[in-house]
Amino acid sequence: MRGSSVARVLLHQSTEMIRELRCGDVFEGCSYVEQGSDIRELMVKFTAHLREVHHVDSLTPELRIQAMVAVRQARPNGD
Ligand SMILES: [Zn+2]
Image 1 (cartoon, rainbow, N blue to C red):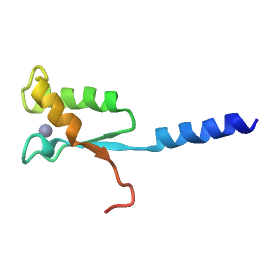
Image 2: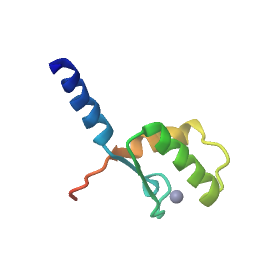
Image 3: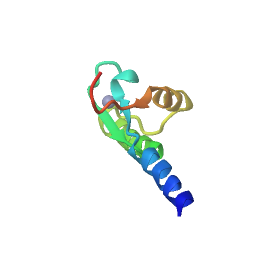
Image 4: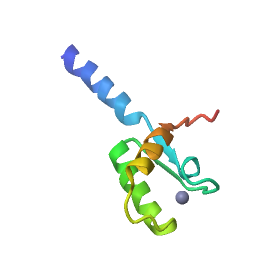
């Protein structure tokens, strides 16, 4: 089944891509970094962090955009 193995490789690559969200890009001076392959999960965890550490009860559209822009692909091998 050549077709299914190609699909598996593509799926593997997409799940292997780790993204990271540095809180410092949104809140200057914060060293919190969240990593994950699922962007929705990242946002959920980041929202929880904002609530706990920065006392932000609800993500404003502006904050949400800043967080989305701050998400980047993690480089496991360093820069
Ligand atoms: Zn933070």
